[in-house]
Length: 197
Image (cartoon, rainbow, N blue to C red):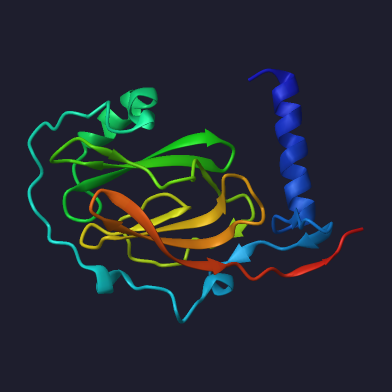
């Protein structure tokens, strides 16, 4: 690593140590603390067990249907790599996740029997720069910060900021119905803010 990169890394680490928890500014300029799992608690939110999925064996060596979704052709390499790992969602589906920048991820769901690629309408990315909610919805098959899903459930939850729009910050619940991710519930994150300096 070049000396200037080391210096920049040290500045970032020193700033983080001085500031403690990560903070962000609200749209009104208030300084806000990170969003935790407690800020996403919602008694009306759907539960994974309410949307059970029957697990079935996927087609061996499924092929990706590149014509099923515009994202399929653009991200075919990452999607093909994920398809080969087998199901992790709703019985015979695979959630594929890839990075799109710092604390940003994009995703698609692939039907491992048909190769069809499914995305949520109007949602391109999820970011979690202001989140400290690793313990939100534990015991899922997800291995990425902004996603919660299970192999035996049709419920899919996005946790974070959608499309880098700070007004869309929280937990967003979708149901896999047919070949669509249908939005069924939203929990807007509670913010803990104070006037900026």
